[in-house]
Structures are given as C-alpha cells and as structure tokens.
Amino acid sequence: MALLTTVRFHTTVAQQQQLPRGGPAEVAFIGRSNAGKSSAINAICQRRRLAFSSRTPGRTQALNFFALGKEPDTVGFLVDTPGYGYAAAPGAIRHGWDALAGRYLRSRAQLRAVVMMLDIRRGITDLDRQMLAWIPPGMRVIALLTKADKLGRVQQSAVRRAVRDELAKLRDAGSFEVVLFSSTDRIGLDEARTAIEALFANANADGDGAPHADAGADGSDADGSGSGSRAADGSAGQDAPAAPPPAGIPGPKRRA
Ligand SMILES: Nc1nc2c(ncn2[C@@H]2O[C@H](COP(=O)(O)OP(=O)(O)OP(=O)(O)O)[C@@H](O)[C@H]2O)c(=O)[nH]1
Ligand SMILES: [Mg+2]
Image (tube, rainbow, N blue to C red; front, side, top):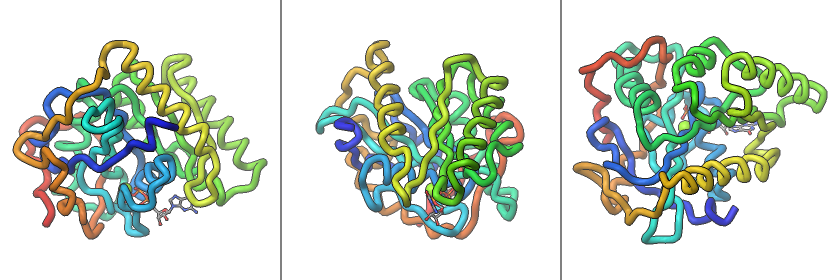
C-alpha cells in the first residue's frame, strides 16, 4: 500500500502527442462507461476526488495520469481511461476513443498491465470480450468485479467463477486475476492494492520502471498544472473498440 499512498495527479492527455515521452511503467484502468474506473482509483488510493467519478456515463474523456513514487521521483503511473460502450456516443467521439485510448492501449510501450473494471451485474460483455481480444496477449489483466455490493455472496461467487473460466479461455494461463470489488462498501481493496503494487514491483524488477524524474507531457502539463483541463462535464460517452484504431484520425479536442 505504501506506493499507492504517494499518488498525485500528473497530467491530462487529450491527444496522442501529449503522452509523456518515455517514463516509467504504466497501469491503465479500463472498462465500459460507468463501470466504476474512476471510483476504483480513488478507493484504491484512499483519495476522495483524485479521479473524477460521476453518474453520467462518459465522465472521463481523456487519459488522466496519476504519478506514484516519492517526489520528485516517479516510479509508475496509474492511467484513468475513457470508458467504452456508451451507446449514445456520436461518431466523432467514437473515433476520438479509437484515436486516443484505443491507440494508447494497443501500442503504448510503457503500458505493463490493465486493471479491467467489470460491473458484477453484467459480467463480461461483448465489448469487454472485444477489448480482451484487442489488448496485447502477454499483458497482465486484473479484473475487478465492481459494485459487488449490489449482489449477495452466492451470486458474487458465481460471477467470479464464470469470469475466471472465461478469462482462462481468452488469456494466457497465470496472466490474470479476478477480484470482487466495491468502492462504496470497501470490498476487495487490499486484494486490489496488493495486485497493483505487485505489477509495479515486477515492472521495476524487469528494469522497466526505474525511477524517473517527473517527465513532462509534450507541450503541456510538465508540472501537472493542466489539472483544470480534466474538469470535463461528462456530457457524452465513448464507444467500442470495434477495430484497431485507424491511423490518422485526430484525437478529441481538449476540453475547456
Ligand atoms: N454501488 C456502487 N456504485 C458504484 C461503485 N463504484 C462506482 N459506483 C457508481 O457508479 C457510477 C460510475 O462510477 P465512475 O467511477 O464514474 O465510473 P467510470 O467507469 O469512471 O465512468 P466513465 O468515466 O464515465 O467511463 C457513479 O455513480 C459511482 O458512484 C461501487 O462499488 N458500488
Ligand atoms: Mg471515469
């Protein structure tokens, strides 16, 4: 838990070119719109409003980077991503998802693992399957069955088993784990923290996550001063990673 308590906002990336150049290992929080990604980051890091959560699907519109490590060293980043699968998203936003989050998940060299939020009431949906087929096969996946407070124990266990069985078919053996989780009722927090800290410990042992002085994002926010740009109003969501992101589609406009 010690590493996660050092968390602080680093930067918002609304366009591919703003991604930090180089830098330490990154772990991305991904999942359908409204699955509980931002709430999970806050709960896991014991912070109330580090990542913005909302009832309105599509609250998170950009990639938000949260730095870990004792300042001024950064030993890793947690990355909150826009959700996929919000049916009302207009085409331009779908393309925006592909161009930013899709491309990031597919090709970011620093990305070591994903924490995938699955609403326990829905389990793995088709969009999640597409996503699982789409992220590189060797990447470690921690599946958090969010909103576990909404189901009783018997149902929780049944979903967990079903998700484990399906992941066993979709991913390499030993490359995933499944955690019952609730941000509101504080279920699975320690299990999730242990799993996430282990990801960074492994990345650092590989020599990938040695401390770096805080790397600025190209053209923005080297000091995290762009935090105002993440005050999105959640007016629209994102859509599915139906296909690898086509090259050349511009990312979404940075929000005021
Ligand atoms: N009951 C319950 N509600 C939760 C839990 N986690 C999140 N929520 C609620 O679910 C809604 C969405 O949570 P967010 O954390 O904003 O979800 P998100 O995946 O970041 O959403 P987008 O950024 O829009 O994709 C909010 O109303 C949260 O309060 C949980 O563990 N239990
Ligand atoms: Mg969010």
